[in-house]
Length: 495
Image (cartoon, rainbow, N blue to C red; front, side, top):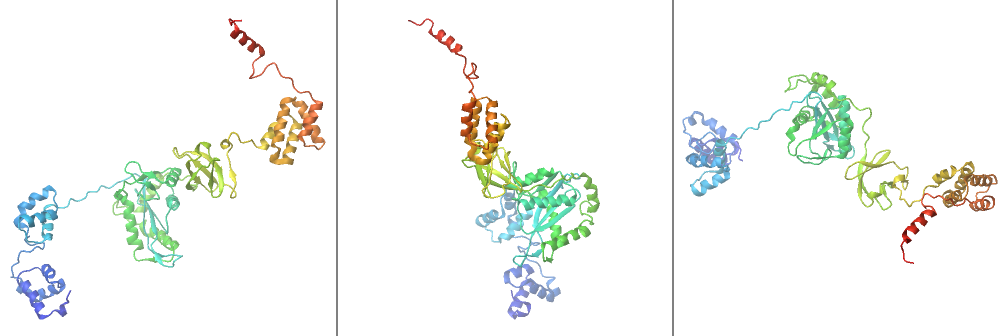
């Protein structure tokens, strides 16, 4: 726009002429393109000359609107819910209106004043609720890039006393989000009964008005501390207005215009500022000191658990045909009924849990493997056709006597897993001969330094008598039972 000292004589006379016609300074600026300050200076120079100039009707606020002749029509259309654009189009097309759209817009806004939004304050009992959210911290130098960036500002605020915990971090994740909660709980010396938060991914995986799906790790952490999650409804951030105002208060008062060389420096500054100013201030709503209110709320907080929450990562794996899943190069067994299905897996520092995908219950737990390729197999997950372990079979044989135990242990020591078939042969000898005879033969073999199953079998064939078949059997009935059945079936049969 032209400046005052650059106006030509003709431009100056044009402005003076429009002022003498009674035009408002805003209208002159809009029509001519000159700056309002320039027009105002000329108006001050004319002074008393303009005081007696009658004002003309314009579209500017405070003057008679160009829509006044059409008031009846406009007043009839506004209650129908029609907007200013539709009314303006009808005025131009059907009523010969030649004014500006902005005049119609202002006229309609006066007939339909905006309804004020009424908000009620949520007051909570001591220890009942806390609110959490993220904001932006002050500019901080990043270690990797060396440039100043704004980190994320985490704030948790107790709804009753307005005591707040603040921390800045570069990046967020489910674990970082949970650890910030734990740091806040430790800072307060206890936990609230409920916590209200927004629908960010660290807390809510799938927002829903009636049934939001919480992040599994976050839900477990809150369960560990006895806190109930209360996610806000989608697009309703005013339900956590206390923490929203706390973030704004921190940004405008503590961090505005400041720069820090590290996150640690900014966090240390926030702690000092909180202790010196935020805690000692008189809150605008409660009219009381924040520190005094927190001391009254502290006894109502829930006590902290004896141990902190143990973090784990959540992944999904497919159960292979051998009823094992692979995690970090090691193999862990799962119940065979999940073969071919994907199951959630919780991986901790020392343990691994396989979770049912439907009920979310732990169905198998293992210790973390010590090296890649190691297998962790639960006995219940072994297929029925899998042979039992050599050591367990040796223990079973050892129950027959000390000689049998010594011979079986020597077989395992000499042959390892290959001794399995020889151990099964010993079980067969225990079924064919008396246990005392087999035990003597085994003791003789051990004393002679012999660990051959063939020698044991040959020794028993020459020095022991096989057991006779008993008259009674737990499965096969006596012969008389079959004779009775045969006679019954053949009675009355033709000869």
